[in-house]
Length: 324
Image (cartoon, rainbow, N blue to C red; front, top):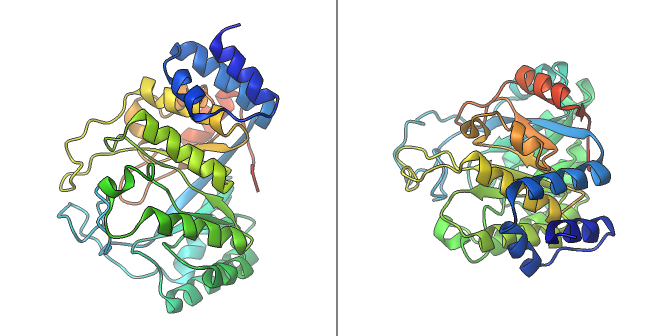
């Protein structure tokens, strides 16, 4: 039995892949790794595919210095648009449009370190309207909030909180200096204490090592994350990462496959940068991924919901809500 098959059988017995085993898996033949990861996905998760969209609920003038971000005030980019928190009517219209296309989750994402108490109250009213008038699930990405704010958000009707780890604890200070990894972890823990599910992954291609990628996902596993966004860096002119070369499709597939081994029952979710790999994520969807963010990203163009629906149907997936 090959090492890949040995690790696959270990996963299917319900045992955890450990760090050194993951590092060895990274070196295994890609096609074998992809095939095994997809078999794990099929046996553990079935053919369900969790599809979501995001809306830029508050844009620009972000105080944080995340080196990949077009909205940071620390860098001069082509993203000059700024606006405050969208109104209830605007957010509701977006939710209805996405629900009508068959999208399962609608995530409201806001710029800045965290929303103010007033803004939290305002968006809670929007969430209540969305839940009253649509069947779509509402997810939120409102920055580094605490348990009290998350309890309000859950009471309003949201079901999930997103806060990306971005990379490993070791590498994160190379990515951002205006908040800490510990703050991100506490945000995710506070959301869980408030009764919300949590969504957290990272960005590939920031200059991190394979060890950093593995450690990020192991941290997510320890936190109980069941939705893992996999972003591929889109080098934005004007940011410190503008000259980095995006990952190729093979490396993206290898990452997705490895993440499936590490959290076998998670929604491994292709997110930002999916359009850079050339096949709209098809190879990754055959390497263990079973979720995606569809439509436009925050400041960059994405892949249309209609295009995604056609691709998923071709691959034999059924669009349905997974992991809560």
